[in-house]
Amino acid sequence: MNKKILLGLFLILLAIPIYAFKIEPNLAVVHHLKLGDQAKPAELKVVQLSDIQVSESYATNRLDKVIRKVNKEKPDIIVFTGDLFDNYAKYQHEQEIIEKLSKMQASIGKYAVWGNHDYGGGAANIYERVMNAANFDVLKNTGETLTLKNGKTLFIGGLDDSLLGNPSVNDTLAYREKYDYSVLLTHEPDVADDFVGTNTQLVLAGHSHGGQIRIPFHPVKNVLAEKYIRGLYELSDHTKLYVNTGLGTTSIHARFGVPPEISVFELHF
Image: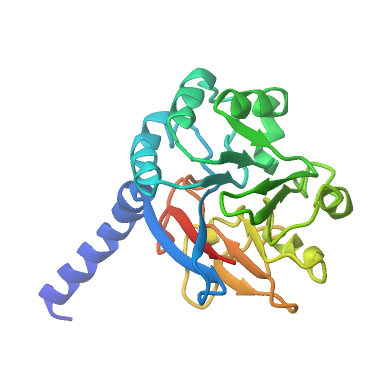
């Protein structure tokens, strides 16, 4: 084989791990989606973050870029769909996390749900306190109906984590009053099917990391993220599901073909 070709192949093989471990995990790609009846005016802008998983590989200063991009969107609501920590027993930095998350601004409110990593490593004892200190309401099989400026109503609810918590769709929906649009938060995306038939317009989830490392013809899957892995889906009753690929990493602290994501939704209803 030609020496130049061999050299080229060697450089490519060398570049892939450098990119996967050092470059792509440091990105923060913003995805914009318009949902609902676009013949009607946009009523709300919602920014979704997921799976920050602060750790020695995702130090709190990495959030500075995320904060700038989130605030640039001027969201009405910010939601976080779980896994603030990767392994709390090894990396805490609670006060720094509070200070960073507090800088994220939303005109109406900030909401979060539990992820499986928020229960592990001792995180269950402090997760809600940290999020509350950063002005996030943590929804645990609860919800809230919000009245918007134009008089329309939005229900936002959240399930407890489906792996290590005690999720209840019925308990969550019991908080739902008269509403024009309904947004449900869950960490694990495959449980979104439990909302089919409940007149829910949008389900937001994370957990999957989008596979984190995208291998052609062999998607990497996670428990309760085997059916829905990344991006926008339409469920059997036309409910929309969006699976955010997350910001941080777990197990292998690399990403390839699945850059960290901030998702921005313009809701028309």
